[in-house]
Length: 99
Image 1 (cartoon, rainbow, N blue to C red):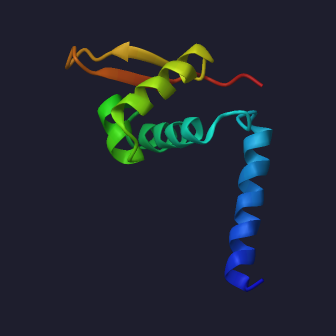
Image 2 (image 1 turned 45 degrees about the vertical axis):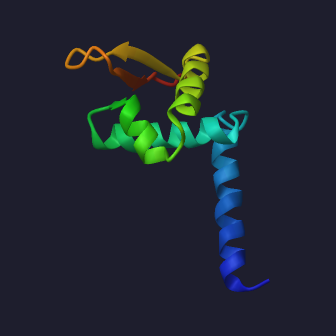
């Protein structure tokens, strides 16, 4: 195997290890993609993301993002709250993790 693919393999193995350590290895690929998008967006904007931003940044359909956010909310990973600035928009807030 060439070095490029070895590097990708090493990175994926590290990612899988981190997901297991963080207890998120059970999330589906869509859930992980939305979760990672929220993490990146929250780091850029004071710990909050809105659903429109998540849809745009993830490249996923609005309905898929909504379904995924609902599941993450039921699992206690995030909170969904109505935006005070725009009542039509929901804000996504990451819940604190307790290990």
